[in-house]
Image 1 (cartoon, rainbow, N blue to C red):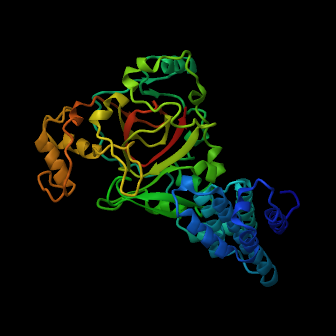
Image 2: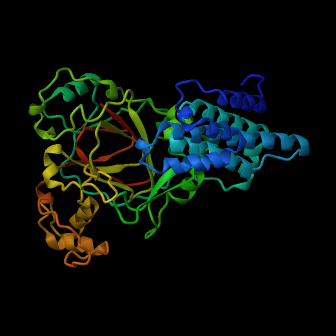
Image 3: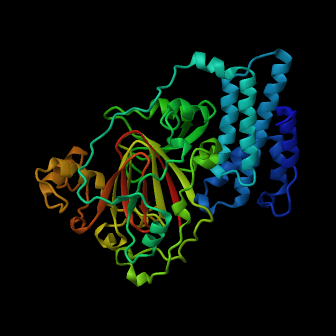
Length: 466
């Protein structure tokens, strides 16, 4: 930042925002709207936000994302310049309210739009805000005012299932992995000792709430979280809260309290300081040593063809942080997946694509959302039934145990009013399973169905790649 001040930087950014090259999608919004950004950025944010919610995110025109982003940056700069000027004239200290409001505006642009063409500017503004608050000793005042977070995450765990069909755990090399990808029977494997070079795995980093707060502007950064049992449950919802609130209030859940999950979020693009703590596994760049015929992949029939979805240029990196008990229902993804377990442990059950007819995929919802990649079968209840049923096994023949499990969840198998579906073929489906421990990676081949449940406070990173 050299001798440049926060004021200098903000003025320079405003000048840059006023200049749009010919191929900038924001030009499609019209000159009047673009002019309004400097005049009334708050109103422009509201208008662009309405446009963002008319269609599914992938169908939203790029111009509205750009408009929302530039208006948000302009609003944040207005707040910064107003604060700097007022502090000069009245010698007032930096207020928490002002910092929160400014951080909110910038983070909402990242979360809502990805900040196309302006991501670097927003990251630089956050760096300036942190420096500005540190220069005024706000961090020390925060420490005095707030209770200190725990040194580590809660160690409480939930039930651990018995592993009957284990996934092999191997210290795999890239050449061995390439051979595996080339085989006629690609299947999941757990790769051990794969995260030894990650800074996130060092003691006192991602297992420390204090460390994570320090990387998220003392917890001021906003994050989207999912509420409820899972995205298929009736109690499902979504909200956006501060990272500090999530760490302090949502990672220890008492019986009966609603679960919350920071799930499938592009946290590392939003907060680059955390991205520096991880490395893309070398396995994501491995190519098969030969090309096998699709007809040879007996376990991987029904795979999505290469023409159905374009492979990402780089692995898609997502964060998964939540308390014990959070889960992802049985589903498939259109990419290969390396699931890296950084903190805590997870139970994972996987079914090959050839078992799809026995897994009862959902269809298209009334809202037109294609849910065919998600099973109707509530695997969490199947797990519960296995514990309740004496001598219960994977054949799912103990109907009495299954009925008790549904009853415990407030459902009655025989009650027509609940309309709880039955899944008679599910007991035929073959699966493999594992408890994924800290420092391990699970390779999930494209098209394999997988169900995931956290056994403790858990922080995982997934890498989707083709």
